[in-house]
Amino acid sequence: MLRLITKRLFETIPVLFIVATLTFFMMKRAPGGPFDSEKQTTPEIRAQIEAQYGLDKPVWQQYLDYLGHLAQGDLGPSFKYAGWSVNELLWSAFPVSLELGLYALAFALTFGLIAGIIAALRKNTWGDYVPMSFATFGICLPTFVTGPLLLLVFASWLTWFNASGWEQPRDRVLPAITLGLYYTAYVARLTRGGMLEILSQDFIRTARAKGASEWRVVWRHSLRGGLLSVVSFIGPAISGLVTGSLVVESIYQIPGLGKFFVMAGFNRDYTMVMGTVLFYAVLIIVMNLLVDIVQVWLNPKLRFE
Image (cartoon, rainbow, N blue to C red; front, top):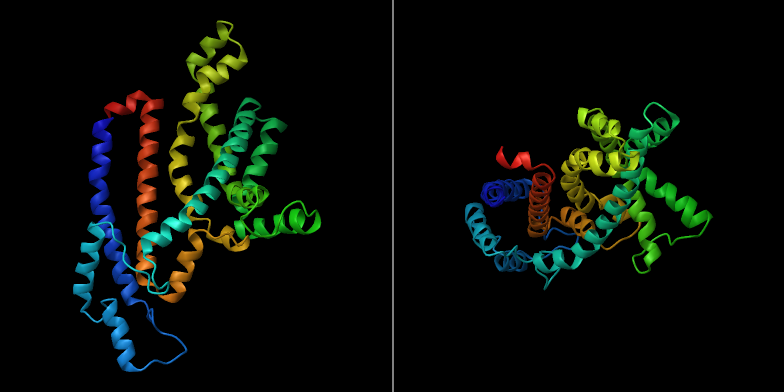
């Protein structure tokens, strides 16, 4: 296990270096600049601002300075939020996006696992067709369609929930469902496929021949092996739930990380864009590492591969 963790950590360094380099030069190639605005400034004032942020230096020197600060964990100051560093902005907004992502993940796992298990146990019956039809529907329906529909029904017509905000506990319900519905569908399909594969194995037939109850066959013998494909999906799913909540945060006016990322792109806030991309990259790497650890725990044979 320690060897696996060490290997993954060493692989992280070149990946983050490539991501930082590509993001830096792509932002430099983007048209416009962080201080372009409708209000015209004198060349002297503009030169002072650019000198303050080091933008008057050659690009190669800016790149080396950026890597030097990055090695110390400093993502630099925000060009649009005066007095704020990128680190401060990320850590102020990330808890909101993380909370939304965890609620959506809980929704996806709860309903996805239940639907997948029922479908596997009721193969080729209505108990299989109905949940899998809903799963296909969830995969095909994007969040920018699901969100307004849920708002129209539950916030406008029924008035059960608020249309926007992140103040009350009930404000979490609709965003979590909107974001988690897509992943619920995938969890259901992966659970069904994994369970069907395990249920067809010889040891399952042996357990049933020995008189084991259906409950024991499912929960003791089948579920652990059937969830391996789901566990593989959870790592990227968690990252996607946190990083992919941009549309949901916009629909429900949630003050999360997606808002800063979009505004940084519009404002050409170089450091904010690069910092957010790197933050997302680290998050994906960490989640994939945790998934590898859980997979080894579920299937010890992977320890020797």
